Image (cartoon, rainbow, N blue to C red; front, side):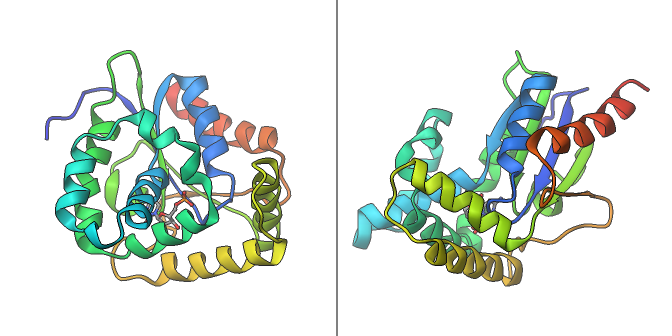
Length: 218
Ligand code: C5P
């Protein structure tokens, strides 16, 4: 694949609800970078599985991913806990990971011309998708804080779910995402750790901005 030259690439890996999406959006705005929330692709396939039941197969996934648009990933139906859990299950499948690889590569290395580069967040962005990213961040927070944040989001969306259910679901997803065979979540030595447990969104972003500005202004 041909890569656009002289672009800024930012790769972020994180467990669920650690604040990576919030930081990625702030980064994309500040530096005019194209943002791809890769978890939404797995959620989209998870939703496809829930909706299509027995018709769910690789051929169908390929067909859908070929035509996928960024607007498809913004659908509110992808935000449920059921979809998140199904996403984590289908994400273990190597064939499915391979199908979505190309789309992620295109977004990372050939973002639309009006952007100066790209920022992708997910579980295997630094380890698999954008190994040569200019900036690599591993964003995390303790599970209680993550569960509280996610629970609040669900309440805002009027979802019927208890805090205990959210906590358990995040714990199971952490376990599955970290221990699976293909594209497991892990922190690489060359990525910068940002722990958001005790930091506000703004304080986190200031840390990230300081790191990025130092390199970009050099
Ligand atoms: O980030 P989000 O919580 O929306 O991701 C949903 C699920 O998709 C994750 O739990 C994970 O299993 C999967 N995923 C993945 N690789 C990525 C992004 C998400 O396997 N790069």
